Amino acid sequence: MNLDFKIIDATNEIMRLHKIKPKIGLVLGSGLGEIADELEERVVIPYKTISGFPLSTVEGHKGNLVFGKLYNKSIVAMQGRFHYYEGYSMKEVTFPIRIMAKMGIESLLVTNAAGGINKDFNPGDLMLIEDMINLQGSNPLIGINLEDFGVRFPDLSHPFNKEMKKIIIESAKENNISLQRGVYAAVSGPSFETPAEVKMLRKLGADAVGMSTVPEVIVARHSGIKVLGISCISNIAAGILDGPLNHEEVIETTNKVKKSFKKLIKETIRNI
Ligand code: HPA
Image (cartoon, rainbow, N blue to C red; front, side, top):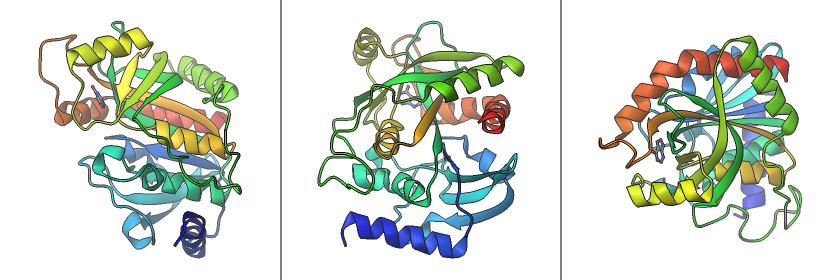
């Protein structure tokens, strides 16, 4: 079945189970999925029950599409996302974003855990993603253009929405949550970077590095969805400190900051 039909089928299937059209999409990264448990009037649809959906294989990632409300705004949240390194194609990685677009979301909040490259960053910092660098070696829009969604050559001069950036900066200030700002570089992973790669990424202008987010943002922007991105700096990138990196550290740090992370996301949603 071609991609258009797969997207339409899955969207119809979901809308049969949950009739309310969401306005805001949320993509929740490693260890950051808990916020979806706090939505009101929650309806949880496991990915495995939706035809065409891939399955999340990473520890710390649940596999649910969660509908609900926050401050009376209808939300759809991805509790767990798909990564290129899991072996999924870019089309599979971004399939849920296509569905969110089909359901009519206007804004998308994308979150992730990332390694800090900027030497002023500390584990546990939250970073507003000002811009991004795609180093994953592919692009989810390669192939026949889905004309119903957007143009062949979408503009990415403003990948992240100016108004939404203002809102999160204000929300952080009002709630005394410190918020770094920077450029997110996406690599394919799954191996962490070498020290030389981290040096290179710093020279390229990256402040943080991760293995996700960029494909989702590209597909959302293709459909004209307004995007906001937040990284949780879960560790200092390789080679800056001496110690080895591991996924447990990533989860441990995201667990530590999840309270302020949740507060910031909720307040931002309230003010959108
Ligand atoms: N590198 C790449 N991806 C990551 C990292 C990192 O250091 N931390 C969390 N995701």
